[in-house]
Amino acid sequence: MNAIEVRDVTKIYRLYNKPSDRLLETLCPKKSRHRDFYALNGVSFNVEKGTTVGVIGTNGSGKSTILKIITGVLTPSAGEVKVNGTVSALLELGAGFNMEYTGLENIYMNGTMMGFTRQQMEEKLPEILAFADIGEFVDQPVKSYSSGMFVRLAFALAINVEPDILIVDEALSVGDVFFQAKCYHKMEEIRKRGTTIVMVTHDMSSIIKYCDKVVLLNRGDKLAEGEPGKMVDLYKKILVGLDPVEDEPVKSEGNHSGQLRWLDSLEENPGHMNYGDGSASIVDVGIFDEQGRLTNQIFKGSELTIRTKVQFAKPVDMPIFSFTFKDKKGTELTGTNTMYEKIQVTPAKSGDVYEVSFRQRMTLQGGEYLLSVGCTGFESGEFVVYNRLYDIVNIVVISAKNTVGVYDMESDVTVTKELRS
Image 1: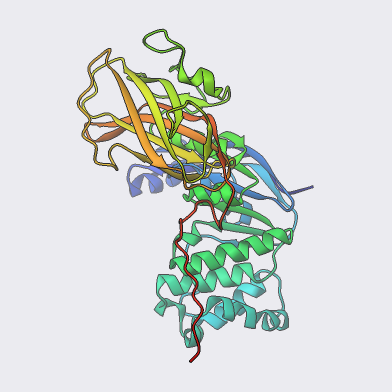
Image 2: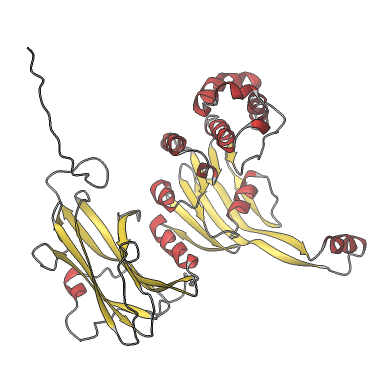
């Protein structure tokens, strides 16, 4: 069953060059003085009951617009949205709050707007106030609140009224790290209880961790929807100005010498993402253990070396080489690049082949991970992707002892018993 159905939703705004054009068009409607701006253009998707769906995209892609249409704040120019269940929305700061009212008055007012009686809100009040933790400020006008206090109260209200559907738009980017952790923990609780969540955030780690499905928007169009890790990779292509749906122009077929590639022994992932502007090509990738053997089986605590061979098709002044480890869901766990490591890389000429080695100790917990590598740079101050291979090969970490979390802090533990006199 779908909690939300978005069907061919279009939102058009009329843009005028100057305010007088709006008045003139009103007085003489036969002559158009505006141009149409499509904030959304025929967007469709479903949100199944009990799932968490993320909406991602660059600024101006229509993310907040679609959430406002779902919550009824905006009316679509065309199409329709069907919502099955009660909705609690946490949009931008200030939405639904009267700045002259106290925090307590705003709680009751918003509860009434959501269909709750005063008695019902009184029953929920202790939990809301405990979560917000703003003390005596609840009796002060919210116009006197700091942005952190405001979002604490807004989030506490939205999440503690037990909605069928929770809509969250970038609200968790405000507040300290402790409150953000508290919010995510609460969201995980209500998610497990079956609450449907639709969230917009620029935090891709949260998207991968919490979402069952992701909708990718760009300039008002829906480009794709699907598994979070894949959608985040497509989003990263948009960020560097590449078409996320075009065929990939860069291929890794053989190496410059015609010899057997390292990748042939590691079983290259046939579904990896390969893109870039073609200025360079990563022609080979290898993982080597501390004995120098080519393998994707690495013992936890041992040394490993990640090697790449990169061939340049044109001169590049300042190439940057990188690697990243991700988990199966696509969360980036660790990685580095030659810029972070302050390695001076000489300019590359057309036809040059560079071999890059990253040597480190494996501290990730036992399990399976995915390796991504890249060659990037800056041209005229703009970030450019020459070639990236996402999830090119898997790596298995073999461990006899795992600790808490994704990596081992390699603690040196000492326990002594105090002697009694």
